[in-house]
Length: 193
Image (cartoon, rainbow, N blue to C red):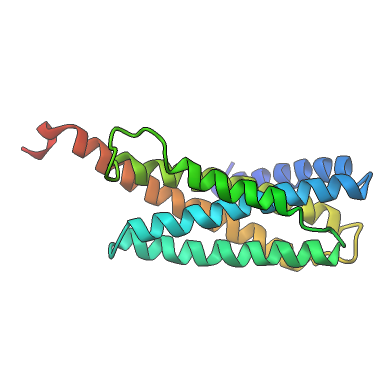
């Protein structure tokens, strides 16, 4: 199978999984409200983490990539809020606040450095951001499947969001690989000889 065929097969499987998830939550508005508020909470935490990671990277090439990513995540979160409004789903502020507070608490992890950033911080942040993007993409695919039955949802918009999430995941993976090489080099002084 060609690379294109493999990607098409993966996309078809992802959309089928999205349709299955959509079918299971479309039985009641309350389930959709819970689902979308959970994704909003994740988007809130992801936005905060992306901004923090970009600020911590300073004036590096990594920072420029993370600032662009943080801007996109902010836009994605705003789009999710618009979709929730179209669907008549109220925002559960306690979930948003809990995600915001959770991201702040995540900064207190024991990373071997009490007063400074660990060399592992960038790598771990990139991994968390990539996992978040994968979750966001799953949410967009679920909404895309619902769009086939709900005219309030724009299939074209959701296709664009799915594609942007795919691109974000790919970019984060490239950045993660570079960060992991930096961590390996920093932890093995023999490689600097």
